[in-house]
Amino acid sequence: MAAILKTGTVITVAAAGTRVQFPVVDRVVKVYLYGPSGNTGIMYVGDVTVAATNGIPVVKSVAPVTIDAPEGQVIDLTTLYVDAATSGDKIAYSYLQLTN
Image (cartoon, rainbow, N blue to C red; front, side, top):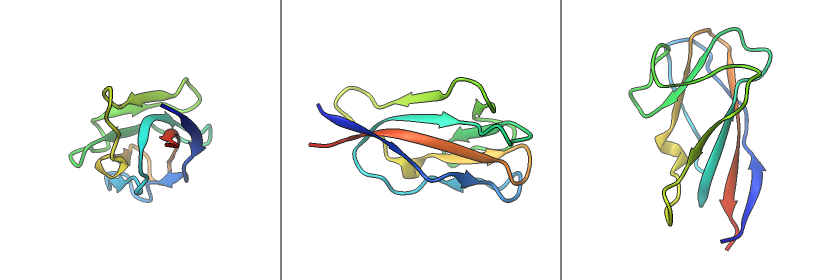
């Protein structure tokens, strides 16, 4: 299984409490989530029920949060959403994408 590391677009949550869906990316096997150093609060990643107070917390300037696909499967990024405790905060992400 060959894969390449790619950088996704930075996602901004314009209004805290308003979740934003990740974009369509095919053949993803791992996602790395980062809180940029300019953020004020905590970002939360999860499914369509994520909110500004629940989900997987992503804190600025710490080690990335990693999501791995189960063996032999891929991650559908459009099933992931991000919300923020503070309006205007962002989440950056990179991902491993299968090349063959």
